[in-house]
Length: 254
Ligand SMILES: *[C@@H]1O[C@H](CO)[C@@H](O)[C@H](O)[C@H]1NC(C)=O
Ligand SMILES: CC(=O)N[C@H]1CO[C@H](CO)[C@@H](O)[C@@H]1O
Ligand SMILES: [Zn+2]
Image (cartoon, rainbow, N blue to C red; front, side, top):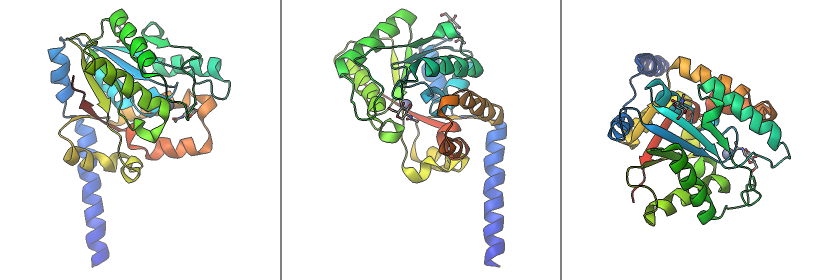
């Protein structure tokens, strides 16, 4: 009896989730924000390493592109920790192409003061300067990056938050630019894939991007272009991470 109830519950949950994915109607607060920024927003996504764009930001990128907004990627390192910077830079361009972002819209910074290193926090002023330069170059009016926990606690990731927060708090970010950060979730939620859709909706009235199946498959294909990073546990990540399916963003105030 108990088993039957559990089976029915799990099955109905699965049906509801699939309907959700199939209908593919994300609660796009972001769309209205982007509309405030213009019918075609110019969205700049700032990452720290080649592969962050598809491991963490794919739902945001794919939905933003689908809505017809212009997208730019700025990656502040080549991912040279294992001296594979040149390879990883190439992989990033391939991954961007799979996601639908042309190479001209992708910029990779190679600066010895911004080393790919998990134990190095990057200089806030330098990060802020690089981001501001690029906001001006691309005339971006929406900027999206990591929050202070940076998904995995990688110091390079949180450095991006501090850079962008610094621009906002010091009043250096142009007035028309809206900034959003990717909310980090706890370890339990991190690896529950689409099941995290319910906690995501309940825990935040914030911007939610939910990928449908075509977008999920595209994100997986983009991930596969990062061949130098495809160690065995990366496959587990691809299969179970909620960031491959769901992004929730939080607006960052001035
Ligand atoms: C890439 O940038 C160009 C130039 O600003 C822009 O017109 C185009 O829409 C962008 N492409 C995408 C896919 O966002
Ligand atoms: C997934 C992830 O965050 N990978 C990074 C782990 O740290 C190394 C060293 O900083 C980076 O090269 C990876 O991109
Ligand atoms: Zn990273």
